Length: 618
Image 1 (cartoon, one colour):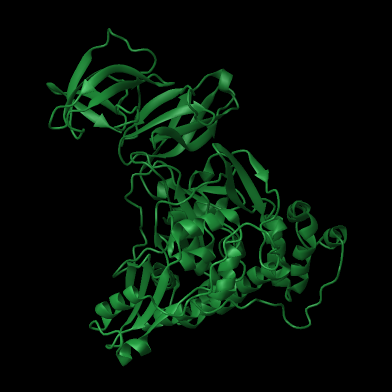
Image 2: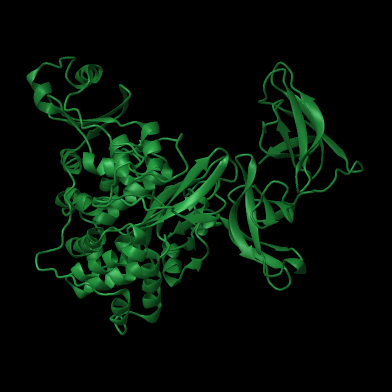
C-alpha cells in the first residue's frame, strides 16, 4: 500500500459526505438541524429525555462469581486468592450518564444493556479480563500485566481537563476575533473559521475562549485549523415518528465547551511532543490524522482524549515503533469492545462502548482510532460502502507509518503476529478513506485488482452524476459516482475486479423504479459484459440448468431484470432435495423469490458451457 500514501498526500477528492456506515462516501440525504442541542456536560436541564444508569454495584452477582471461580480459582470463590485477585470495574458513571442523555443513545444503551467487567489475577499470577452480559460470559481475555495496568487506568474516573493557571480569556466579539486572524491564518482558513462561528451561534464565545486558553502558538494554529474545517462536524441521528424518519444533525460548533476544545488540541500536541512517531510527522498528516478528533458522525465524548492518553502513555512510551504501538493498543481495545450486529443505524458514543463492551464494525473502528490518536499515531477510517457478492458493508482502520499503510480491524483480537494486510484479499468493489470534512480518498487499488469502466450514457446526461451500484441487501446500492462529460460519457476509475462482479449504472441514487442505464458484469479480467435488459425476447435461445440449495418442495417465482424492475416470468417448484430446474435466456439476469415475495437467491444468469449449461450467481 505504499503508493496509496503518496497519492493520498497529493490531494483529496472532494465529494459530499454521507451518513451511515460506509455509505457516507456516496450521497447526502436531506438533513435538518437539530431542534435543540443535545445536553452535554454541564448543560443538563430537568425534564430531558434519557437514561441515567444507576450507581455501580460494588458486588459481583453470585452466578458470575461462581463462573469466575470455576474458570480461574478451581471453583473456590471464598479463597483468599479470589478475594484479593478479583474485582468488578465500571466506566465513569458521570461520563456514562452524560452519554445517555441523548434519547437516541439512551435507546441504544437500553438495547445493549451494560456489561459487567471483571479484572482478575489468578493464583498463578496470570491476568485476565472477563466480560459478562445478562449473567453469561461475553468474552474472556488473558492479558499481559502491562495491558492489565492500562485497563485499570482506563476504568478510573475521568478527570476534567482545565487550562493552566494564568490562562486569561477576554470577552471579545466574533468580529474582533476574526479581525485578529488577518495575517495569522490563510484566507481560506479564516473563511472556514467564520462559517464555523456562524454555525456555532451563541456557542461561538466558547470556541473563542478555547483558543485563548491555549498557551503556545503551535497549539493555537492547530485550533485555527480545526475551527476552519469544523463547520459541518456533527453527530447525526434519526428521529422516528411511525414510518417517518427525520435525520438531525447536532453540530459540534454548537456543542463544544471551551474546556472540551482545549483538551482536544492540548492533548494532541502533548502526544506529538511525547512520542517519537508523532514528533516527526509532517504537520499536515498530524493535523488530519491525530489532531482531528472526529472520525464519523458519532456523538461527542468530552474528556476521552486526555483520559486515554493518561492510561496508555506509561505503557506505550516504552514501545519501539508505530507497528508495535498499533498492535499492542489494538489488543487492549479487543479487551474492551467486541462486535455486535443487531444495532441501530446511528454511531455509538465511545463512552457507551466502555460500558456495554459491544459495537458495530464502525464503532470498533472509531474506538481503536480514538485510542491510537490519543498517543499520536496517525490513523484513519476506511470503509467499503457495500460488498458486491454478499449483503452489508464494512469499516476498518489504516495507520500511517512513513510510506507504509497498516490495514487492520479495530478492536480485533488476534493471537500471534499482527495482520497489517487486513482485507487485502477481500472481494471489494470500492474502498475509501474518509475524513469528517467530506474529503475522500479512493484506496481501492491498494486492496484489489482494478479496472476502469466507461460508458456512453448519451448527451442528455451531460454534467449529471452517474452512480455505479452493486446488488446488496436485495436492492441496488451505490458504491461510486462519476460525472458525465459534455458528450454524456462517464468513467468509473479503479473498480474492483478480484472476481466477476455485477453492477448497474443509474442517473441519480437508485430507488424503486429507477431505470438503469447499463447493467454489466465486470469480469476478473477487467472486461465489461453488458447484460440483456428490457422485455424478454422469445426469439433468443432458452437455456436450462438445475439449481440446488433451495428449500425442499417449495414454490418460487422466477423474475428477470428488465433494467427497471424484477418482472415475473415463471413459477418454479423445488423437489424433495431442494433442487429446481431453471429455464432462462442467454445474457439475461434472473433471481428467485419465495412464496412470501421476498428474494430467495442472489441474481444469477445461465451460460452455455460446453455441451451443457452452467448457472452463475452474483
